[in-house]
Picture 1 (tube, rainbow, N blue to C red):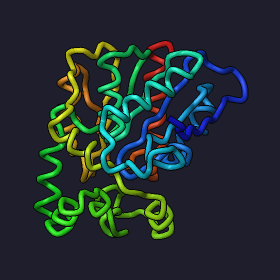
Picture 2: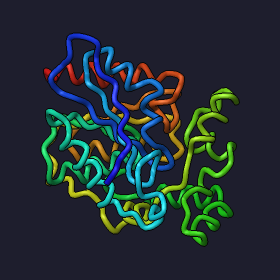
Picture 3: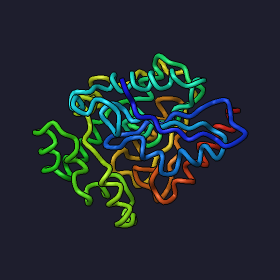
Length: 262
């Protein structure tokens, strides 16, 4: 599988452990290239972001609708296996569930779940959205397409960003959004949920107080499942890596990696 990988290498004092970033629904590797890749490279980490199959410039767009969560895990296995050392994994939203599934059978030095889909699945998040936007939910269900969920700039802002995002930034990000695999969404509802008892990797679980996609309560439940505390950032929405205060999130992640000696 030909997969797009965006890489930012440190200029000096490189650390031995690389970092691999995994995006969520509607996004691709570009969402990490905005801030996180250069920032982590500045702090000595070889930083890589992949576009899962059917996303960005990766192969598989024509088969996207029926792409499974297992397919996405295979993409992470492929890219991680090509790196010189096992990477720290960072998964956002759907990417967080992909990381959880990966860790069932693969070791990693550490992993960060960022506004991650919870191990108990997306049924609560789906019901919240359906109550708030029944027409968009109906269109998504009838067309087997996930794009209607964020299919207008207004919905994109409500679901992914803080209300104060600038119109220019919103337009630029919305223009880069794309459809998502309906099969993978169903997998995250109930067909292919993680098995937390198999995960032995140290986890950092982070969430956003104003997240309309994955609620702080769901982030806290995820942390409890893995026996670690959740950390909720105030005045932030779902796309924590693109929010105005993204650096606070990155600094917490970097501090945690330092604590682990990575």
